[in-house]
Length: 495
Ligand code: NAD
Image (cartoon, rainbow, N blue to C red):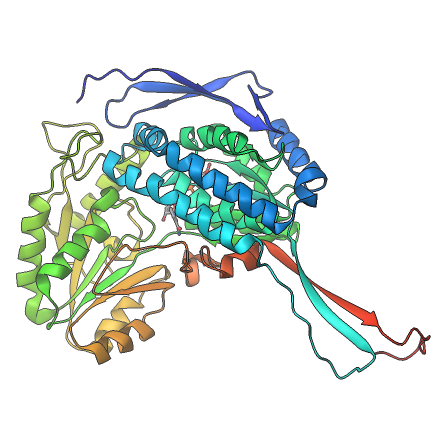
């Protein structure tokens, strides 16, 4: 454990363009999963603060923001991208302190964030309607895309700013206003982002942050009658509750949920590249990633060779201080998550799985560290194959032919991502087409970009974030019929 003492910081709510303590007057603490040290006090918001944030967001839909053109929003989004780039180190440090993730991973993410704001700045003045020809020559018909209104966003702890950005950048481009309730386990970077939107010059009420430890806050935001669209990233169980709450208000909802993504490795694959892809898929970010490639489905003829390669690489992974450049894997982000992962490893043992490597907490580090774990001897019915673990655990099982590989890959309620490893170009595209998931990588894993839609099939979610498609979720289409003759019409005749 490090003995470094972090400077104790303070974060407030941001409502209607003001940094406020919150109506409870209380705060909660957040601690570093690496040192265990409390490093920040964060304002404890209440349901009344959610109400106030939503009211401010609604008010901001009119006034300077509502009157702004796409060109104006584009300029603000560019400015925000610039300000984020200037503060990338600070943002990354806050995320490392909160989640224990590696500094070099988080700095990579925070340096990439501006690309999302620049990309959506490019779209803000291109949200176009259509002129639609109809069978009624006396009418001109056109559509307009209007902002959906107030967006309520609820985000998880694993990559707080990246997953918030997937929502915020298209919402702002579309002209929406925004209330975010970040995870109670990693609220700091979102609270600080408010300072950057303030600095970039967004009018008061366009962006609001309500932090708090109570799950009531997320519930209140999802169910709020003043919210027009709910954007959620988190677990499938919570996502179902959020969808029910939003459904009661007949609200739009997008859900980015869990996954149990397959990596299918054929006998002709470049095994060195595949082994690296497997490490990237499940040990990067300590496996705490919705798109973790946690199921290795490997051709039986190369099972032993590939497992040996992955185990050798996994055993070389350096665990330690998340702020050190040398470290490749940090701790699991919090106590409940650590216990959940260790329980799954025990369950695998109980069900006859073989721990090929890892499966324990290294004595010299203790805390929430878990050695990268590879489990063999499991099958499609094993608990660790069926359930999302959200930790550094790879479960390995075999197939005999392509049909079986596809069947095993699709034998899951989830459908977020997956990979195919083969040198056969025909098979690569065939299998990519057959796997039911929102993102498939061929001979790669864990690559994302603002231009490319991301989201899941089945229990992995509803809707897509990123890309031009995301703008659709933050706009409503209005059809306008214009009578061209200036005459009167038979009131009892349709059309
Ligand atoms: P979680 O579902 O426990 O919490 C997510 C957020 O929802 C938090 O802000 C939480 O406070 C809030 N919340 C809790 N109960 C709520 C309720 N009843 N109504 C409304 N909001 C509520 O998830 P987590 O533990 O923070 O994150 C881990 C999960 O997120 C994993 O399952 C992972 O797969 C998933 N995830 C998905 C993606 C994706 O893009 N698909 C990305 C990251 C994480």
